[in-house]
Image (tube, rainbow, N blue to C red; front, side):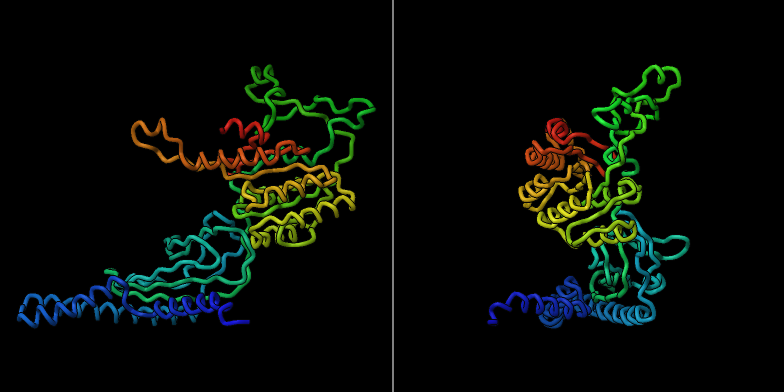
Length: 430
């Protein structure tokens, strides 16, 4: 292999070493510029012209700069000693996109003068904030993505209050932990339960034993046609008619998660399916990134977390999974997937259409962010960019899945709403 082929890897390695070495230099860019400017001023203006005012100012600045450098170096030495004694806790049982509190890896000494300590997580990605809870300093983290991790890489920074001196370094804390996907507002999913329930009638050629004769309270996703308005006028409670318990056997359901660059909402739907036992007594779960399947809840949750390593959907893997499910007698499948399929849209569609197992597709989204308020007349004419992007993605998805033999629905993780048929909602959001 020629040296030119190794050039990118060597360059990255040199840049990494240079960045690490630069972090130990005890001057910040501001301090370096001020120090570099004070030397010629001191030599040519203050000493050259015997200006006592400039001499005093330059000398005072250099003394302050030396003092803060010494303080930052001392605090860095004590910080390294603290980190050797204990590296902090790991976020066992953390949930993505929700705050999780850990004891601070180092005590923040408020009595140490003019010096502050801060840090951030490099791996895995997380937002970090130091808060005071119950009289102790704690590390509030918000994990960006689910996953199974083997270490935490923190980047510490010791700096003075003036921003003239700082030292930056990294520390790795080893230990296995997993982060489960955040469910948002996905607490009840009656539509998903309906997917895995029995049929309305026992046999099309037999007696209609599946009439809507039972009652239950209205829940999100029910059709307004089934509401008993007379009961509501009398009791002020929304009740709906539901089919009586079907005599047909409950089908064996298999579920599959397709991954993508932004698939946290899809992973949250799968978590609700698994934890809520919504797939029936005989089920199996598979996902992109890991071959095979699981039918135990603990193993399925582990598979769900490890699927975060795959950020591109794999059509060949889902095809093999559905073929095996058909051979094993599974009569229904639920495929949960994100809107963004990383350019594999057509391949994914062809793979799912070729399946001989009847499929229900669930497109999981995080809804549109709250629009930014525009000033004056713009709020009536300017449509938020996030809403435009979401509408465009929905129209593309509607065109992609038009004519799919199974049902395609949208579920919004942000508010827990089941938005119904994809084609109808895409036209409404246009």
